[in-house]
Amino acid sequence: MKVDLHNHTIYSDGIDDINSLAQKAKENNVDIFAITDHDTINGLKHIPSELENKSILGVELSTKYNGEHVHIVGLFKNRKIGKDIIGYSANFLQKRVDRAILMMNKIKEIYGLKIDLTTLLTNSNGKSITRGNMLRNIMQANNMSMEEAAFYISNDSKAYIPASKMHPQDGIKLLHDSNAIAILAHPTLLKKETFKEVIEMGFDGIEAYYPLNKEGEADFFKAEAAKRCMFISAGSDCHGDKSHANIGTSCLNEEEFNKIADILGYDVKVMAWK
Image 1: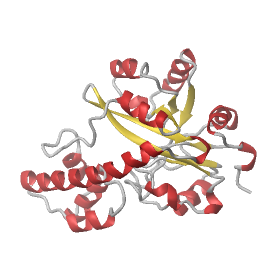
Image 2: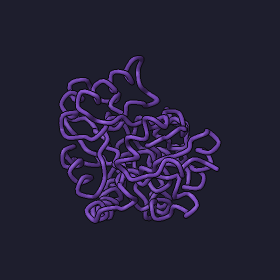
Image 3: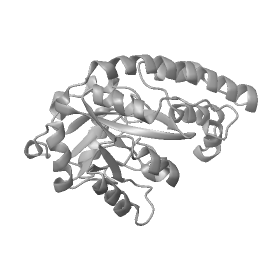
Image 4: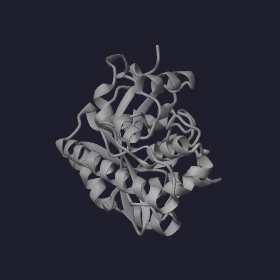
C-alpha cells in the first residue's frame, strides 16, 4: 500500500482537478491520498462520492517564524471539518486575492513585466491564489520559462509580499480546534535552528518523507519524531506541474499509515483500489 498525504489541486496552485489527481494516483499505484490545498478547504466539497474512500480531507496552512515560511499540513478526523477552519478559509481567500493584486501590480511597476490580472482572478475565482498561480500568469503573459519567471515571485523579489504572518503555534491551535491533526510539512526546507525551535511547538507529526530530502534526512526526521512520540508522515507535494514531484513520489507504507489512520478514524481495509 502507498499513501501520499500532501497534494494540491486547482483549488490552490495545483493544475489538476480532483478527478485528474485521483487518476494520477491510480496510475502511480497510490492507494490513498490527501488533498491539502493552501489555506483553503473549498476543494474538499467537490470530492466525488466514489473517491471518498481514497481521499483524506486536509489543508496546508501558511505560517511564518524567524523570517521563514513554516507550512503545516492538517488532516481532518472522521471527515469532519471544524467551524474555525471554515471561517479562516473564507477570510484567507480574500486576503490572497488582495495580496495577488498588490504583488502583481508591483511586479509590473518595478520590473516592467506584462501581467494579466483579469485571467488570474477569473481562473482563481473561489480558489486560493498562491505564488504558483502568479508564476504561471507571468510565464504566459511574457512568454517566459519557469526558471526565468520564478525570480519575480521569489522572496528576493522587490515585489514580494508574504501571504501570512501567522505564528506556527497559532496554526497548530487552529487545526486542533478544527478537528485536525497538525503535521510539520517539508522540514528539509527549514534552516536547522528554525527546525529545532518549531518542532517543539506542539506538532502531532513530521513529514519525514519528502522528494527534496537530502541523504539521511528521512532517518533523521523519523528519529526526531520518535523522541517526541510523534507519528511520521509522507508527502509528494504534488502540484501537477514540473516544479514539484508527481503524486506517489514520497509515500507511507501500510504499517506506517496505520498509526495515522487510527487517529483519523479511517478503515485501511476498505481504502485500497479495487
